[in-house]
Image (cartoon, rainbow, N blue to C red; front, top):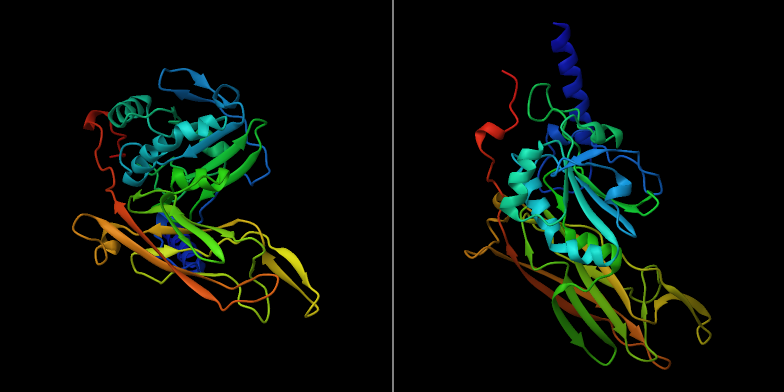
Length: 362
């Protein structure tokens, strides 16, 4: 009776926490996402840790980091979790880019080294995988997911996410999401960290601006969170009004709502304050090239089915509106249409042989 009362109380608390999450979502959060933790804050030092690599060697931060630091991903399982396996394969696409920036890529799960070896060989993993079967490192980072019932495969898993850590062991960025089915793509993280150029680049040019729009990647998978990019280059002597301006029209990036994806708010760079003596005003503007980004989380197949073509493509459409002025004249606002066509891949559902699988209690 006492156990049942405790279980009911825990489920009630979880339901309250999920209900209080007001972020727009494609689907309700389930119990596995209740009370999500993201571990140490940006600016904090990571805890000391040790884990075993696929060669059986004990590794720590000092032996894992590159000259500029470490990208450390915590994932649930490289066997039974399709979102995790797809994410771990996706990290492969940016390994070289991060290494050129002096950052090594590492991922850790609670799987055995045997499971990780088989997954790495099948997928062709080119970075270090670490085994943490007793979840010691996961607990040290305080991201243990307590929602899994003891004796099940969920016992010991982390809330999945990624840390970017500098060479001194200080966290400089972190990428977590409350819903374990949504994961930041490696290309999105790379673009955020280093301002890299995107894929599917298209350029529109007129007398006022040169605008190039792109996306962090051209192929996505269900649940992937990617970054859309708009680069704007004002022409000579032109300025473009920034958010917060009055009496003029600020830049605005619009994306229609969809049941197939979630668009997050656009991230606008800091503006310059420009004094206009003729009208005795100081206004926020952009006078040099600038970049605006916004993330989009792609839905699962059931959510994208109505908009996905037979060859598994989805089309994203939006618009970028701005008003420009030069030293003599303010021009009427203009709207530039934006469009991306993305290939949608499929989740990795292949498992290791039954003999290697992590067993649940009888």
